[in-house]
Length: 132
Image (cartoon, rainbow, N blue to C red; front, side, top):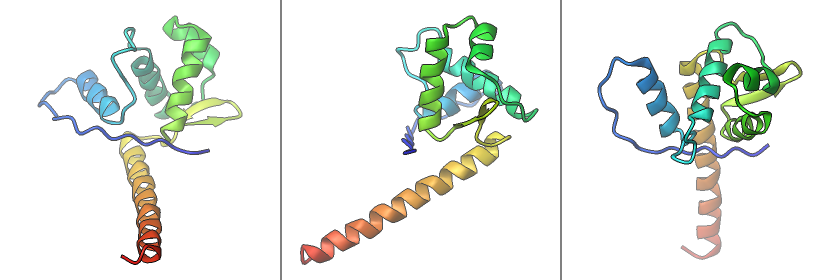
């Protein structure tokens, strides 16, 4: 599965509010946007974070019922989170890729470094072929 890692450089405002911190983090990762008027993706993200601490996979039906969202909305956002490399699908349901946000960021950093390394190698090959 391909990954679409989006990084948005948003100035971090000082705060002690955990919800604002999580909102900043998710927005910086390109997970949330203005079209999500009900903060559905944010709420799904929070639900997955809470379950990650307990190493529990959850189904889309469970999320839909818990957050009073349609299953279609939940699946749409879960797919977006999987494409971003944040969530993985397991036999029992969906889980955050790592059990802690710090580990998740570490893994995403490695993914970005791998992608950039591959891009650099291809760019070098193209430059050589073009006689640069």
